[in-house]
Image (tube, rainbow, N blue to C red; front, side):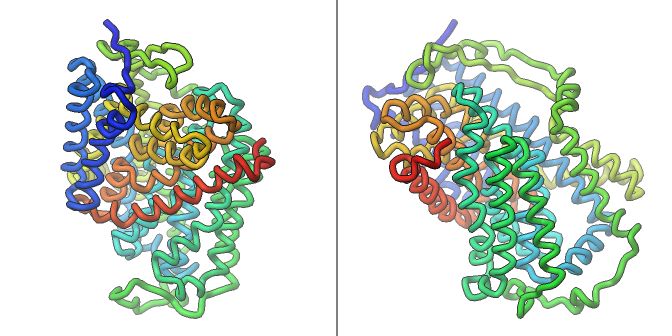
Length: 543
């Protein structure tokens, strides 16, 4: 038995869009206004979406229930699997005392919190995004900043905002590759177009972070370092996306930023060493920190070196293909090919697949878990201590284990019911202003799904079809879906849940949402204006 999506269940687009927006309004209200814990907001929004799907969109009850359960399953694996394994590795370094060595070794580069944020939140976080994506960079880099002594709210917020720069090319370029598959547009062209949008954002994100963190006057003290980090990242991002393809921009850009910034800081220091207001001043400085042997440094950094190597190996195509071999593809009964997408979302009536892929070996979380075993051997952690720390980590993450699956359940029911498509069609109906709103369509997709990849799969074809209708090159709007989407990542409930789990802020999801939401909106406006200008004034920039 099949069911065909209806995008105007209330007879007109405005009312249907309002109905589809109810779950989003609920989660915005609970997080931003009531400052409710993430698990409460997530569950409330998921239940609301289920009711709207069944009562307004007339989705069969069992189909709606099955799609929600499928989303919950994806929230547990692979998303939560990444979070728990990433934080487990961090916890092992803390329990064994090695994180103190890591902190001090970073401090030998700089004691300044502003510069530490550039190195870890912006540069190292981008490297992890490019290698793995799907929550890994925020989980690792935010946890590291808290370990260094950062205010947890700032650690989480800074890492979420810093993650704006690399998201479109995350996970070895998978968002761009998916956009090409969905739309039939040459992947290289989409990569080139995104590479002519995001570098402008990447160049300003470092200074944006530091102004947010310490104010304008303080940011001016480290302006040279911000420019070094942002411009080196942006230049390599432009070059690699335009001439090499979508797979390597994040890896190469982040390495360029780390290298340039580290070399620069060996010869330049800010006039003052900045710390958070109220933070106790350390009795030691970069010059008086304890010195460590090469062996001690390698051992302390070893878990993160192993993590990085494993993530890179898992992303290499030949190895990934081998690891994918034992993947279990479970066709979800009652949902697989049971929901039919129709125009204008699909070019022709198309049955939506519902295949739960249990990629237990190729998942990024598995790479991290293997890294944890190797790290335990390196750190001298025995089996008993290994499982004790893992159990402690699991207990630490019990609330995110509710929040993340609930948010994925919300995303899946909105996708399969057609609610997301109603919202997309509303934005697509803006005529000649569509290039501006195409960025917001990507923003909406990432907010709903927590993934630029998923947003491109959800709205990529709609972007292409609408662009042709309004006389704009579809390469531009499909790229804008990805570029605009990166600005929604920082407020996606899924990302918020990962960040709070990594920084000990579970229950404070509303505070973190409020911390990032204005930055998300302003950056989305910037991408929207840029896309509009490229459509009508700077069309020569379109490949």
